[in-house]
Structure formats: structure tokens, C-alpha cells
Image 1 (cartoon, rainbow, N blue to C red):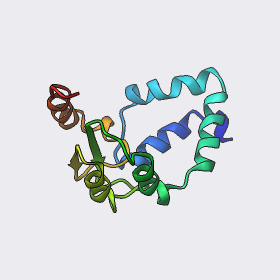
Image 2 (cartoon, rainbow, N blue to C red):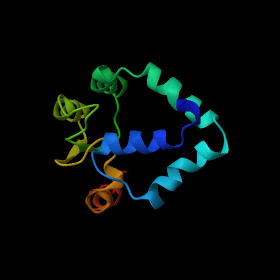
Image 3 (cartoon, one colour):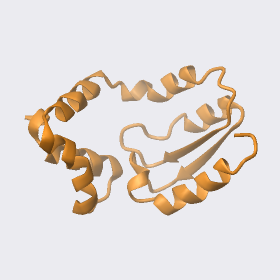
Image 4 (tube, helix red, strand yellow):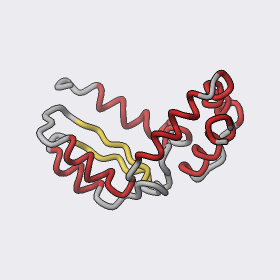
Length: 129
């Protein structure tokens, strides 16, 4: 059963990233599953409500009128969201920049930390943030 299977999070993370994640890193994500089944129930209900094909459109609508600087770091090899429309989404934001991670999937923070950090630091150092 999904709500009680701590390995479900392993499959979710590895399927989304397209890479193997070391066990010591997966252990961090497994801990809530091992304490209670509520983590699994939360994930199950969240997954039921996802409409991934509409995600970028919903983000565009949700950010309409946003005036703060935005940095979008996107795994261009995302198996669930893809990359269609992400450039248009960022262009519509105005004060926004896109960092494309060509080989990254849905969870780029697991494998591309150096590239992400190199992008985040100059963004946070901007004087207008």
C-alpha cells in the first residue's frame, strides 16, 4: 500500500530525477514514512490532484502581476513537467531569469547542487531583492 511503503519515495525521487540517489540521501526522505503513514497519505492525495500537463499554465496564471525578481531553475529533462512553455513563462514574468539544467529532471537539487548554488548566489546578492 502506497501510504505505508517507505520505498515509494525512493521510486518517486529516482523516477523524477532519472538518476540513482544514494541511500544516505534517501534515508532523509524515508524518515517521515517510517514514523507514520500520514506522509504516505499526504503524498497519495497530492498525486491524485495533480494535473501536470496544466502546471506551467497554472504557474503563469498564478504569477500574473508578480513584481518581485524571480529566478527559475528548471530541469529541462523533467519527465513529468517537461520544458515546453517554461521559456515563455519566464519571459512573461518580466524581472525574471531562467537557468536551464539540460540533463536535470524533476528534482535537480539532488544531483546539480553546484550548478544551482552558482545560480542562486548572484541572484540573492542582487541589491533589489
